[in-house]
Amino acid sequence: MEQDRNVAKRQRLGKEAKGMAENKGFRPFREAARNEADQLTAAMEDYLEMIYRLQQENQTLRVSAMASALQVGRSSVSKMLRKLAAEGFLIVENYGDVQLTEKGWKQGKALLERHQRVARFLQLAGIKAEQLLEETEKLEHMSSPETLRCLDLLVDYFDQDAAAEARLEQFRSEAMRLGETAPAVNENDDQLNH
Ligand code: CO
Image (tube, rainbow, N blue to C red):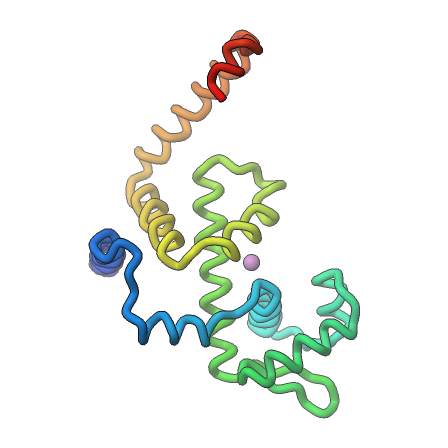
């Protein structure tokens, strides 16, 4: 069953990747326009992802808690909440409680899943645990959906083959070991390469 789902997912990702290659970046106008309208800023994405995380854990959403979690002022939190409410992602109750709408819940879930997939990719790529969160935040906001789908496919490849991940790990530690013992780069050689 799990296997079937994986195969279906692989087929879907493969089809999308193939479509991208064939289209060479061309997107029908209708779709481009729709994406334009749906575009969220990185800050809006951060808020929705965090609110979804908190609401999933059944935590009450208070402006002060959000402000400290995001390390911003309370007024910017209120301003952002108004913006997200205007876009239909959430409702701010009179007593200050925040509730995600169905649209907001869906979007938040997708953003959290994206975050987790990007984190897994970076982990596979050898990013250290202490840098993982910061690097994930950068990559998830800056990459196109197409790039994220390609990273996803790469993660799937390794997740379905433990031996492949072990080989990658082996290759990496070998490269690190060689890197540590490599002679210092000659400055003149280096200049020639620029
Ligand atoms: Co994130």
